[in-house]
Image (cartoon, rainbow, N blue to C red; front, side, top):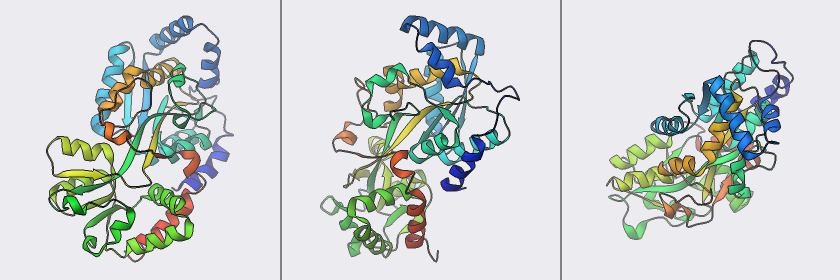
Amino acid sequence: MNLRAIYMVGIVVNQLSFAGNGVAQETAGALLAKLAKLSPEARQKALMDGARAEKEVTLYTSLQPPQVEPFTRVFQKRYPFIKVNGVRLSGSKVVVRVQSEMNAGKGLVDVVNVSGEEATAMQKLGAVDPYLSPQREFYPAVAKDKDGYFTAMSFITMVLGYNTNLVKRGDVPKSYDDLLQPKWKGQMYLDNEAYDWFAVLLKHFGRDKGLQYMRALAKQDLTMMRGRTAQAQLLVAGERAIGIVQSGNTMLDYKAKGAPIDLSILDPYLALSNSIMLAKHALHPHAAALLIDWSLSEEGQSVVTGFGRVVLRKGVKPRFPELMEKEMFVADGEFLGPILEQSAKEFRQIFLAGR
């Protein structure tokens, strides 16, 4: 289901009553807003007492599968009386699952962790509540919305990845125009759902020039496939020379392990915000608040940056500082929401027509 359909359903779903089926009538955000009036010590005690009674918290996350277990394990070490039910899904599947649960009048999730446009979709569905975690003060404005619906737990940077056995040092693309050179024809991957990348480049180049560039790039006999992880594996194997839109941390992970992989940061330097949010009808609101607070804390962020992701919390040392050397264009839900459907349509027309 596309995001426009999700938004339209959200108008209806948001009017439903969630009083039945064991779902709390008072929203999680309203309950936690009351606790915010307490002193920091009293608030923390109230959260911990409530979480001990709740005993568990359910997290829907788009973290990579190998990242979910260490992330939840460190949290549970800090709060051993809370069991984390971690459910790993792609961001779009998280939205669809939450929407389905709302339609059925059953709120099962407590905390949601998704990226950019999915975060906006969750808000428009009425599935999340504002939550002003005390940890938000340690984050710049680009990492949070003013109303408290979401805070960026990390950023996934988009870079050009290449196989160093197939791309000579002097031939490494330094700009998007370099990708139009004849020598790269038939040698490049592009994710077949790189709609956010498409939208950002059109904004950067200007619509007319951007569309002209995309049509020229489409003539380069690109290998279109879903999934940056699969593309990265094929890059390592030397199946193609270049992955146009790759995760910076994935490329540097492979490089650190000795694989023939490196990256080039092109302009604009795209970063996708990966946000953490409070479910509006969380069954375990106290435990949910503790999980969100911890995720945004120095300890939680140290775990996240260990995955190689960019974090913007003050005082946290990045694992890959080279990913923070250039200014990022943050493609969050506020930017992508109004234009994503049109960008997706044009992307498919240019890159996927006839395939």
